[in-house]
Image (cartoon, rainbow, N blue to C red):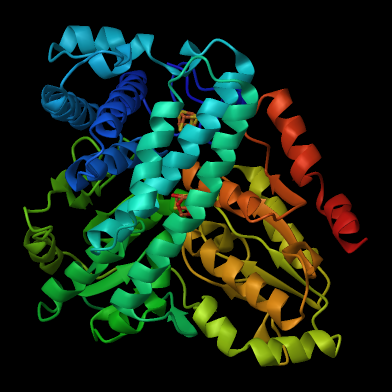
Amino acid sequence: MFCYQCQETAKNEGCTVQGVCGKKEDTANAQDLLVYVTKGLAEVANRIGDDNEEVYDRISNNLFVTITNANFDTDAIMKVVKETIKMKDELIEKLDSKDNLSEIALYSSMDDKELERKAIEVGVLNTMNEDERSLVELTTYGLKGMAAYNHHANVLGYRDQEVDRFIAHALEETTKSDKEVASLIDLVMDTGSHGVKAMALLDKANTESFGNPEITEVDYSAGDKPAILISGHDLNDMKMLLDQSKDSGVEIYTHSEMLPANYYPEFKKYDHFHGNYGNSWWTQNDEFEAFNGPILMTTNCIVPMKKDNTYQDRMFTTGDAGYPGCKHIEKDENGYKDFSEIIELAKSCKAPTNLEDTKVVGGFAHNQVVQLADKVVEEINAGNIKKFVVMAGCDGRFKDRSYYTDFAEAIPKDWVILTAGCAKYRYNKLGLGDINGIPRVLDAGQCNDSYSLVQIALTLQEAFGLDSINDLPIEYNIAWYEQKAVIVLLALLSLGVKNIHLGPTLPAFLSETVVDFLVENFGIAPNTSVKEDLEEMTA
Ligand code: FSO
Ligand code: SF4
């Protein structure tokens, strides 16, 4: 196996024996094969050009399955590989001619041994030239993130054909061996601009379905009733679970990236929605033990269970998430998921063990902040707010992430942090206070709500009549981990945001040439130390 798609890749070079994330070789190979056959499906779909939603859904779902920590179930992934080949073969029959279809589009087999062989052959290192490989993978990882956000919008009934078409088009483009570095760079930038569209689509889907997030104090303490913990990013699953459990005597808690569900008016209506439990994704082993009740993983990030865990029988997956030994809840033909088994199981479980009595304020998505715009502008003009620093992105399990806690503590008291994604768990409980009522940590929501942060920046740009978003007193110190953060980064670049600090390390999949391009054109810099980074930002 060879995988270097996330920030925790071995030695910041690549996982070759087993993933640092826990992904085994057979799972890694199955994911490589899934990406390969999905590129073939995309090529055939592009040739037909009939905007078939079922095919587009398949493409987005397949990419989502291969995102870091989403699916560890090799059998389930191989099943999807076969379904994809079948769908693609049926589509090929609709073509007048197979002429000019690539080897990838023509590849077909249902034989397990042959598929295993092929999986080994089609890995990342298959692209020999390092710069091409770097740009192909940068595009592919951006597409994975975009596909995840697209999928969340799609299940709420929202589509943007431009996004669907682009994902299929770009996937095919990555397979063309005659591509020059310059045209691959264009593809990367196009991926970013379509990432903005995908995030805008999801923002519309979420806010029209569940209302605009509101400033909310979220309770992290446990109650005394049996309960279900829901994690991941899928708000549609959240809605179905709340609906189905409302008169059951069971309470619902969010975990990790589901925390922002607490900010939406539609979810606040449910009395049995208790609050949030636990912290960032990587702390889940202990927190899931302590929760005592069932856990529903709607997306990544899943952490492999310890051998002596007590929660394997009460953890469920759904959507594109999967874990061997955990029951997977499928949707029916109308998209409905029956969570009754989880609710019944919860009734027989003990209430969660209380871990903390913290309360944390969040819900500063664009609509809410735009309403506060006058007050924010006033504080900036009065010199009370000197700078904003965007610290959106991901959290991770390694010690060097304490940089973000230290950074948040070290910034001047007249700086305000804008955040989104699970990165916030490194500093959202520090008690950093407020500036005349404006909290110094403004949490917009999930990683996809980084879109909100862009909207906030554009509002301020307009309020101050500035020509460029880069003229604002905003610094960017982004933490990345998996591929959703890649699309957030590319989206920011496509909007012309410059001088982003990216850490804890630069992606291993960026070749020297690509890093040079990003430095020269966008001023991207890796994190150094809190002191040096702050000095640079202050200057
Ligand atoms: Fe985090 Fe995981 Fe949301 Fe990611 S829980 S790391 S960037 O999946 O998607 O922020
Ligand atoms: Fe390694 Fe990350 Fe790939 Fe897992 S997802 S195998 S940790 S690079």
